[in-house]
Length: 307
Image 1: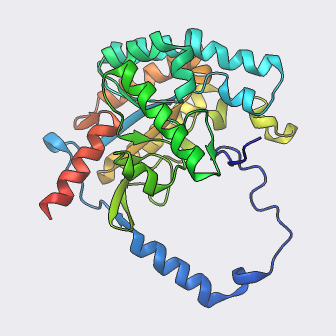
Image 2 (image 1 turned 180 degrees about the vertical axis):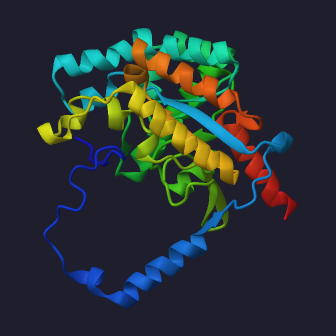
C-alpha cells in the first residue's frame, strides 16, 4: 500500500512523542527556524479590499463525502454520514449561498468529483469556484505518485467546471503546485490574514483558516476514530455566536475570515438555518466582501504587482 502524508485534520497523535532530544533543546537551532520562517512569510497587512470593503469573507466547503471515512476504514454508519453530504448536504449549501447571492469556494477531491459530478457542475454553473482537495484526500509520499494524483484531480475538476483550478486545500508540495499552475493554498494558519510564502524562485498565496472556524470541530461526532473525550456535537446557536464574534473582531480591524464547512456536517437542516442567520447578520453591516478564494488571491497578487 502506498504511504501518504498524514491528513491535516488527523492530529490526534501530535505532541505525544516521548522523544525530547535533538534540536528542540537547541535554542540556536530553534531561533534559526523562527528566522527562516519569518523570511518565508509575507503578510498582506494592508489588503485594500475592492470597493472599500472592510473585510473579505470566504465561505469554503470541503466536499469530502464518504472518502475520508473509507480511507480510515470507519464503520458503515460513519460512511453513511459522508454519503449524506453528497446526496443532500451539498445541495442545501448551494441553495443557501445562492439564496444570499454570495460566491464561495468548493474544495473537491478528484474522486468525489467522479462520484457526484452533477453537484460539482451545479456549483460551477452558479458561479462558485471549484478548487482542488487532493485526488483522494491524501498526498502520496512518492513524488511521482503525488504528481499523478494532482494531475488527475486537476483534470477532473477542469472537465466538470470548465475552468482549470488555481487553488487547493492540501499539503501538496509547493514546487508541484507551482509547476501545475496553482497560485494559492488554503491550508496553513501562520497568520489570520492572507500571506505569501516564498519558495525557490516563486511565491504562493496562502488563505488561512483556523480550526475554530471549521465545522468539524463542533459537529463531527466520532471525529476521526477518537476516544470518547474527543466526541463533539455543539449547539448550533453557540457556534453562531462564536463565529459572529470572530467576524466582528476582524470587521473592526479590517481583516479576513475563512470559514471551513463540510456538506455532511453543515448540510444538516438545523445547521443550514444557523448559517442562514449568520450570513444575514453579516450582510447587515456595510463593507463585507463575500467572494471565492480565487478572487482574494487575484486581489493579493495585484497588490504585489503594484509594489
